[in-house]
Image 1 (cartoon, one colour):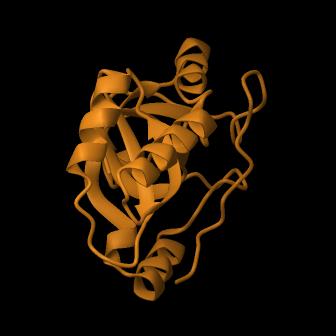
Image 2 (cartoon, rainbow, N blue to C red):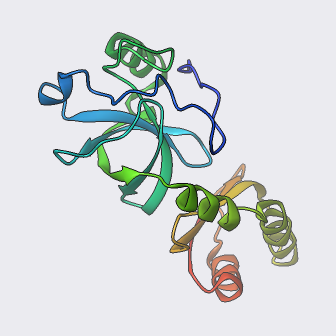
Length: 189
């Protein structure tokens, strides 16, 4: 497996990419762009509505099959900045890593994220370490042989996703019920 470059994630107020609007006229040829999102840094192609404007490398609010999330646009067509990843690099990444690591038709970009959106996402995930500890303690109490890797709260609070490792198949329905009761939202493992 190989990885695509992961560029520095800007903080609010910091420059986003080249600062220009992405597309460079190519949005008519490629009505999609790549977005890196989620705790596992998934990478996928997202459509965007005609007239949607976002800066190269900007944080964007996206709709995926999991729900509403915040991701970072990875430029496929901007020639003016260091955030650009060529389609040839994407193809090499897919060939080396497998098609499941780059998802086509993954969703839609709803808009460029506002500072309030970024703050909300940060607030939702402020206690991830506590969530991991709580989940690990519950799993131990339920005698489940799993290791909790990380967790993430999706934007809007509509779902909490826990990532885990296990040597064997695990029935974690009781764990999911306990976590759903605690978080009062949908749980995905």
